[in-house]
Length: 310
Image (cartoon, rainbow, N blue to C red; front, side, top):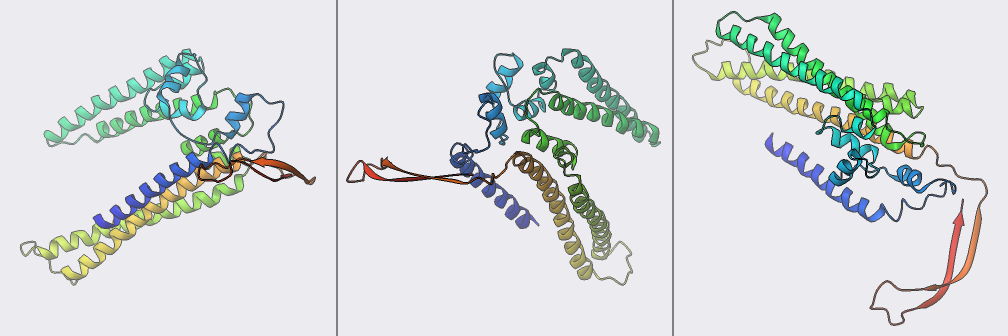
């Protein structure tokens, strides 16, 4: 169990490390060659359209809140996950702050109150299920207000770019499939939801069976339990480990399905305006080649430069 999760975590860390290195290598070179840029567009619009990264800058976030600089949509979103209301401050929607803080504060406060009442009822030996339900409802209400504040701040972010890649990805993060709908591809929603709901079904089924055989193993391994079932401890242990492994794979499948639909929304929003013209042109002209290495014998060379426009 521990080794399997260690292997999964190590693979994810390697992927993130190599991905960050690759993005650093290609962000300024490969992605700067956009043959569909509008020559009349402003530099801010062009940069925002090319920006598909989710890096976070503290100085950019607080500078944007102080209205001293422009802050990216994704930067505002992730910063507001900790500093709640930051997006509303950046968008100058100050009147929304009392609603957000009041809703979250009231929900958390009432949840703590009902939780205390429920704990006291347990200590008294008479569990108060109504207090338990109200506790869960209040905490859920606070979470809903928090979620709505992130959604509101992202949707109210002013931009002249249609189908912004960052907005598409954030929509899919908050509501799986909403980014695909934003991109005009609602036919993808049943696919991703089918994968996630199917994985969720198997997660629930494998969890139930895992708990069942785990209890049998405990009873069969305890001579004082009075267990007289036909399933031996060795058999129960085998099925316990098997369903635990399948449960873990179900969790991994849910996470992969969720991440795939977020990536899909971001990529297809970025590529939405990418068009290949039917007019192709080839430009061949002489050029002077300057080597990038100091080990070259001649510092300059003469050659030809080939440019293809499409």
